[in-house]
Amino acid sequence: MLDFSSDYARGCHPEILAALGRTNDQSFPGYGSDELCEQATELIRAACACPDAMVIFLEGGTQTNQIASKMLLKPWQGVISPETGHVATHEAGAIEHAGHKVIAVGAHEGKMSVQAVRACLEAHASDENREHMVEPGMVYLTHPTEYGTLYTLDELQAFADLCHQFSIALYMDGARLGYGLVTPGTDVTLPDIARLCDCFSIGGTKLGALFGEALVFPRMTPDHALSQVKQSGALLAKGWLLGLQFTTLFYGSAEGRFHESLYLQGARHAIRCAGKLRTGLAAKGYAFAVDSPTNQLFVTVPNGELERLSAFVRYGFWERVDAEHTTIRFATSWYTAEEDVDALLEAL
Image (cartoon, rainbow, N blue to C red):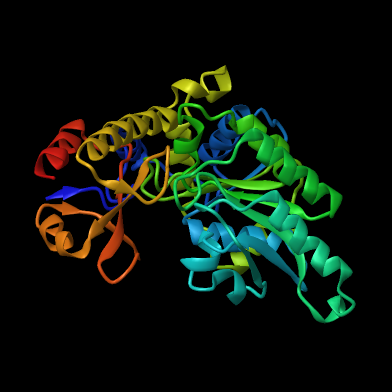
């Protein structure tokens, strides 16, 4: 059975597995106070060109987004998100459960416009009943978006300027960040993100780690950060397991070789496989629901074809288009074999 269902369906990069084996008989201090987490922090700081950044290692993406909102928002504030954003759709209300409303704004192919966010902020500021309403305190972006699309550097700069004007935080969910950083044509780098965002995450789960996300605060240190993580049930006792994985993925960054890191090597491989699959699907006449340049491809197929596809490939359900058509997702990853791309195209 071919598997293009997601980019986190395999265990971890073999070099991480080897590193786990090498360190299995060693002892480390708990809760992220170990030398591996310290080394991983320095590697991430170097890759971001942000030597004073605070880095918090967490296990999963939803947990990371919830904790970021907790640290960045005041109790009476909410987060502006695209209506298709992960925090608004597929996190079971985790942000709301933490006490902060998600203020959904219209989006196109996963992207929210600066104009739409400005209109939301100005509407609240001019409303005479605003004291009775949730105040926007943060803008949430994903890069790549849930639809695999990317923001440009000009767009990110405009969001940063807008957030600065209204004195609110700009947060980027980077669960798939590596894939966005290496997509041909992008003009956004990791140092750009560190410069423009108040906080962002670097996803490991979807880019070769067994699990793990790095939450980065480039310029600020949240009050009692580890206490807040602990209060959320997210402070991993064996924190060195996270540090080891990010040290392995980002190895070489301190010497200015982030471009050679396993993190970006795996991402480039996924983008190459996605490009090959995209070309092959187009040649066979498949219609794309979204013009995604990254590792997620969204294809609209007749419902009658779903059963045939399910016999030889795992894919991701995306959405019902109408009574006769469904959009499905093929995702490539760091572990995708090019032979599997060939096999899928041949079977189609």
